[in-house]
Image (cartoon, helix red, strand yellow):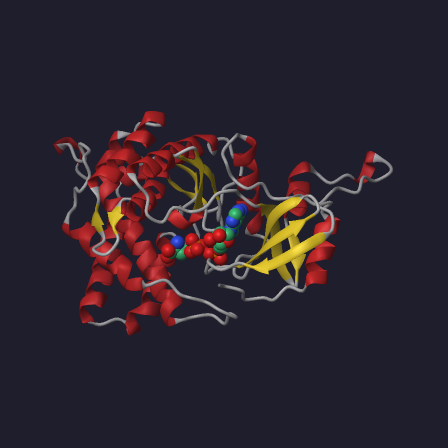
Length: 350
Ligand SMILES: Nc1ncnc2c1ncn2[C@@H]1O[C@H](COP(=O)(O)OP(=O)(O)O)[C@@H](O)[C@H]1O
Ligand SMILES: N[C@@H](CCOP(=O)(O)O)C(=O)O
């Protein structure tokens, strides 16, 4: 469980009442998660999740909360944040502008921390996905990318290349010689890729950037699992759609003990994605590089969380060696997927 900040019953009750959700009947710290403080909240009106943001600032949060609202309103199964009811002034003269109002309405403060209350999704995560689950995810991911095209806010992926470059020197002292060599060489490779014209041509928009198995829920209808929702948008940002796809492939379509690519699940995910949005030539070309980028991103963040842990009541950091293995696999097998990945005329040009 990651509970960095304890929230009292009365304080949570005051918040949900203010949001028009009725009286609080149950408040429980959530097991799982590493980034923020999360509680399951039950009120007279239903089931919600209260999140206290431990690292993100009140200035950064409207991007994530408004993105969730935007996607939910376009039919993507995303928990919609609960807005603060507006107190209407007697005259229209001092009404706030819609953008500012949206920012204030979705963001709350609890125990001195910025906080949000979102709908609780039904279902459960599937940690041993089949090709069927991967196809459900692939289709949802493509629909989510398309639904984000008219989202009007821009905020970079805060765990993107700049963060990797800044954080590598912080974790390097904790690594042995082969690990340091891998980290340095992969970072150099990713900086080279990011400067290429092929990379600059990649389509981009708001991406989830952390769509692991534990951030997706499935309901079972009869014997058929149906994706019921995706959550935890707090690593989202404006980035390439391909990076988002690579994050998913690296978590949903690998053999976990070895980190090796698993062909049937990867094909199911990719086919379902491409049924909704076919990949462009530059994306097919750079998929192997983005699979490496996605492995590097989570290797660095896991190293950082592991070697520089934060204070929490209970916290189980994720194993960094997993993504070291995935990265070695990806770097050693540059075209693991059944796609025409690199036509001769599409070589990466710096
Ligand atoms: N909207 C939601 N609906 C249902 N369960 C949720 C929701 N948000 C979070 N959870 C539960 O809380 C856990 C931790 O949430 P997560 O967002 O992954 O935390 P963190 O951002 O701290 O890593 C999840 O594994 C899930 O069980
Ligand atoms: N998914 C990341 C870490 C972020 O944790 P989450 O619980 O917020 O998804 C990882 O596995 O390293």
